[in-house]
Image (cartoon, rainbow, N blue to C red; front, side, top):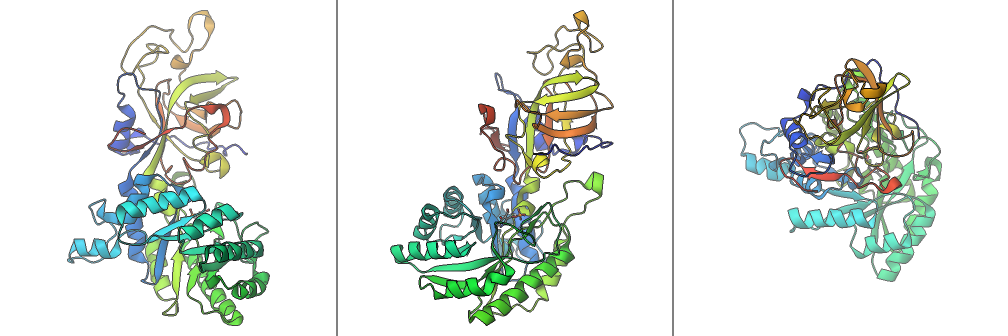
Length: 473
Ligand SMILES: Cc1ncc(COP(=O)(O)O)c(C=O)c1O
């Protein structure tokens, strides 16, 4: 695991850039509360994102949100409901029309992409709560689908299985035959070349995902020969974090043409082209000048694609829909100066929030002050409480103590509570004053945050998950 890149000379975000609800949640401290270590979510943001995406896609597009990005039930519910939750109609196109009708027509996502029994259960439960009259549309992806997983998927009536290999095809055939079902499948393709850039590349290079392009005819032939499989089309998910709408459109066009050609050659009636997820969000607008993915431009281009009337295109977005609905907040437990470098030590770390290290993102944060001014704090004080202590960062005996170290204008390294130097969330970000008791808040933590962290090392409690405006976990 690499450390996050140095961010110098980046300044920390001003706390005023955080929404008032986030600031209030971080500043509130009920009597006897534990130190703050939490994901804060605004499901209405996710709902608006879902409706904005829906509004720009043509009618032949189906949105299956990738639950792996964030499976928190209030977020899943909001994504299904769409902007009706937000009550603003954000992203709705037509003026003057009945907003209720529009919301119900546009709604949120159509279903979910799931990779495990747990994700399937979360997705089904959300559908049961929000759209009980509609049967859940679930598409299953991911390598290493075991007999146990495939059995659970088929028993629950999964809508589509994106199959990754010939072994998986035969295994699914056996499972479907045993259960007396016929299962719709797509074959996942790893294209020989992917003209997209992003934070993670899963196609266009050797990978465990899908089958190489050159093997697609043979694998489709095998799939067709298996009586309990109904081959509906092809699946491609080749990249994550792409911000270039024109490049994404070229990629979708390629998927469509390739699927059309391959299906015709294999004598398959093409019904589904699943183009996966991969829409990026700007994590580093301040440092790299990243701009949001241009959904309008993408939608306009899509509408011009020659999609046959009986073909449906599936999108499996994850990050785009939920990245900005979450904030990771962790209390500063200590501040230390070590050989000239200032460390801010959190009640948290990479076991809660692995994003910056795993994708080498410079993930900027804001410092929310909660501590008393320097030279008046003590380890067990609460916000606003004064106590005694040394001045000028140096207490009695010449030792610099954390609540008096002056970090103002200095770059700090933000680390977690694990016993490994790899537990580093940010490097060389210049801050104002930071003291124990303050809270570091990372915005854009709604996707691949809680879910992506490897939680059990050292056994510290997991972070709470809080819906803004409500308390609890
Ligand atoms: C098969 C599949 N579909 C969709 C996604 C969602 O990708 P993103 O969050 O980049 O949109 C992933 C993410 O890994 C995936 O593996």
